[in-house]
Amino acid sequence: MKKLLVTGGAGFIGANFVHYWLEKYPSDNVVVVDALTYAGNIANLDRVKNKANFNFVYGNICDQALIEKLLCDHNIDTLVHFAAESHVDRSITGPDAFIETNIMGTYSLLKAAKKVWLEGERIFEKHRFHHVSTDEVYGTLSLTDPAFTEDTAYAPNSPYSASKAASDHLVRAYHHTYGLNVTTSNCSNNYGPYHFPEKLIPLVITNILHDKALPIYGDGQQIRDWLYVEDHAYGIDLVLQNGRVGENYNIGGNNEWTNIEIVKTISKLVEQEFLKNKELSKCFPNAKAAMEENTESLITYVKDRLGHDRRYAIDATKTNNELSYKPNESFETGIAKTVSWYLNNEEWWQSVMDGSYQNWITEQYS
Ligand code: NAD
Ligand code: TYD
Image (cartoon, rainbow, N blue to C red; front, side, top):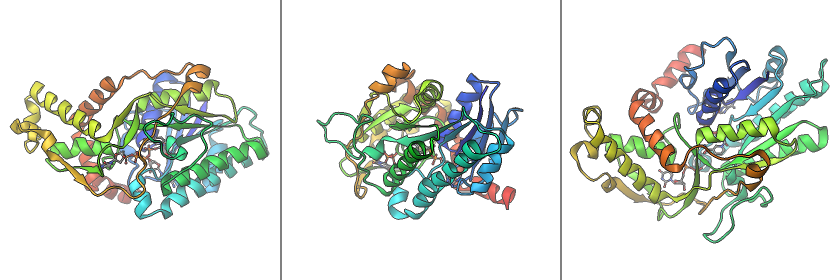
């Protein structure tokens, strides 16, 4: 039975991970610590909030004393670290928060873990610090380059990926220098439920429903390697159960698409859903599909992102071979589930987009 501290568990991947974990391991204890930034939403944890073995703590990972207290009070043996500033566009306009949370926050967690697990009154020999990272630390690929392996040299290009790379190096150093039991996973782009609608896939779905332009940066030929979020949670599970301490594991689904292909696929799926379910036209009367017009006409090419990485692709051979990892969802099934989730959860995405949820946090925690 594990006792987990999950940082950033009210965000997109963290919340999906908590759902996954408590369904698969119902006797484990899970504590989430989250600062509820614009990207964190406690409603993402509604499904588990009443479970006796689940606790939510409103707090910042930069608060080392708080993290030490949580590790001690809850006898935590496994820390799974998702908390981060995660949006590349925001890192371009305002890198400070990325340096603070992604680098200093990870450093604070490492210091707390070292103090409690390695130097405390009770030594936790079987502890694990799992760091959730990204394929973006490896930089960018041309069309003909081989996909990133765990041995690809780090070459981050955005303030976001540079801050994640720095945190990966700190995690590695705490293993080599102090003997902290760490693992790191580097995953490709995720998609699925609870994805904040500033990222490409949820932005396109919600813009279609609002009859807003679908902004394509540059020529739309950039390539990302997409993985359904539950398959990321499953990969982390395997690393926690059987991964070798001190190792990095790539997680990905071998699923590369250009951005324009993604947007066209989603446009078609939404149109098909409107044809199948006439109620949708009443819920979203402004959508092109409600008027049987062409959704793709919303596609609008806009100025490119600064320093835009051309292609990411993950070679997950090590994780596949060593941990028998294989994603459960194909892109076809995962994207259909995702579109359907957004069509059925308007209340969720309206509240995170109109800021009403942020007002609620201010009331609760001020
Ligand atoms: P997200 O932005 O949706 O969620 C981040 C969460 O962290 C939010 O709940 C936020 O409130 C919390 N948080 C931010 N700063 C904090 C702080 N200082 N203290 C405590 N909590 C804080 O991000 P996500 O997409 O769920 O990504 C989670 C992790 O996975 C990140 O580390 C990211 O780098 C990594 N990752 C993301 C992707 C992706 O496609 N989204 C792919 C690979 C790796
Ligand atoms: P994003 O979801 O921000 O993830 P990341 O930058 O971490 O890969 O963007 C995915 C791709 O989509 C990326 O190449 C940028 C592009 N993009 C657009 O073309 N338009 C948009 O409005 C957004 C948000 C992203």
